[in-house]
Length: 270
Image (cartoon, rainbow, N blue to C red; front, side, top):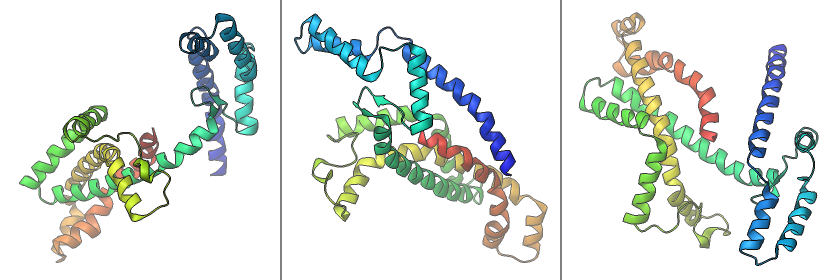
C-alpha cells in the first residue's frame, strides 16, 4: 500500500510541474505587468506625473522581483512554495497568498461539507422514496426535480435567485456572510440565524445539483436491486417490505454512490 501511494505521488509530480509552467506562462502572456497597472492608475486617478508614476512602478517591480528574468521569477515562485510554503504575494489584495487562502479556506470547506452532506442525505432519501413508489405522482414529481437539477446550469440558478432577491424582495446584502452589525460580534443564536439568512442561496444552489444526481442514481440502482433474486427470497421468508428495502436492497444500491463520494468533494470545493 505504501509503495502504491509513493508511486502515485511520484507520478503526480511531473503533472504538477507542467501545470505550474502552464499557469505561469498564462499569467505572463498578457503584455505588461501589475506595475504597469499601478502606473496607469497613478496617472489617471492619482494625478501623478509620468515620471513619478514610472518611478513608483519601478520600485514596485524591484520590491516584488518583477524586474528579474521570467525563468528567475518562476524559480523563485516554485522555490518559495517547495521550501517555505510561500505561494507568493497577492497583487490584487496586497497580502501574502497564503493569508488570503487561509482566510477563505475554512469557510469554503464548511460550505462544501454542508452542501455535500445535504445533497447526500436528501438525495438518497428521495431516491429511496421514489423507487419504492415507482410510477406514482411522488415518483413523477421527484423525477422532474432531478431532471431540472441535472440540466439547469448552476450559474443560471444563481442569476435567477440574485435577481429575485434584489429586484423582487429588495434584499440589499448580497455576497456577504453576515449583516454589518453581526460581522465582528461574538457567536450567538441571532448571529447564526443571520448567517443562515445570508448563505442559504449558495447552499441551495450547490446542494440542488448533487441532490438531483444522488436521487437519480439511487432510484435507478434501487429499482434494479429490488428485482434481484435475493430480495425475492427475503420477501418469501416473510420479512416486511421496509425490512427488505432498508436491510437488503438499500445497502447494495448504495455502492455506486459511495464510490462517487471520492470525486464529488473536490468538485464542490471548486
